[in-house]
Image (cartoon, rainbow, N blue to C red; front, side, top):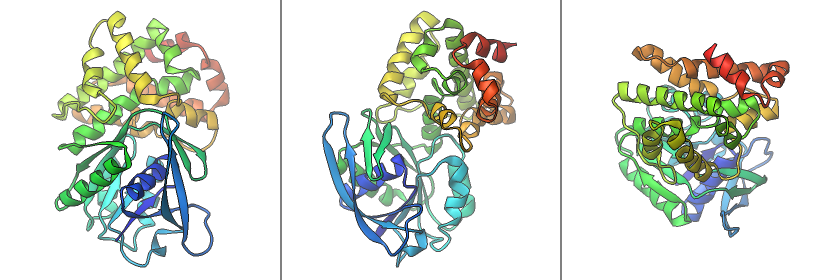
Length: 340
């Protein structure tokens, strides 16, 4: 059987390569592809510069497959997930693997595909496309998997084995919700603030008051996790429990701990929300990150004013160039906007 990867960006290409390199038959949907399915070679370059390639099949749409896939890997942005799930209506019982940032993806897929099994995934490998079929890995992260419905345990193990064979770090997490929230906490660090200020996380951490905003957003997210009965879990290449432990210390101690974690997690890649802000086009994932913290906090009776305000500010700078220019390089203005 074939594994179907929906999403031809950096993460989708990485996973297509990893599964194929692990001995599985893989098809990847390439947007804009015309004509029948075709064979192609995808390449992943490791942080040490060593390149490895694997062969996959490129298709124009999910229904180009002749038979139901063994698994559908959804590797799109959160705001595209509903349409991606709808595009796979030809295969309603095929299990799905979701590897999106933030929380809420599994609920979207479960609602759209009630007859298919579900595996939650978190990609901690920082990657970027350097060519149409070439991905550069920027850190030592990998892929964590967690069964999110009954009947997918064997498939989860098979996928994990293939990914491990490719050389990527991998892990199996017992609690999918704890895994996704732990990845969300890691994604929050230096993300919204970098989009608003157009500054790197390292620059933001150099400003004590701006670091205070960073710290409070994480503490709010951890408070939501506690109310949900979840504990941070370690992911491949992302020691979220250490982050949760370190952020509670005074700033003089917490700042170097968090800086170290960020450096290892991101490589040289900008945070996702800053990349989106600099592109000047399309929506962002902030509603599935800071917005998800704020929404769940309100539902659970937990205070999360910093995450709510950061969500609002990211949406402002994405739609109002003058607003972003006002904040650019001015952490003091961010602090005033959040605390005022």
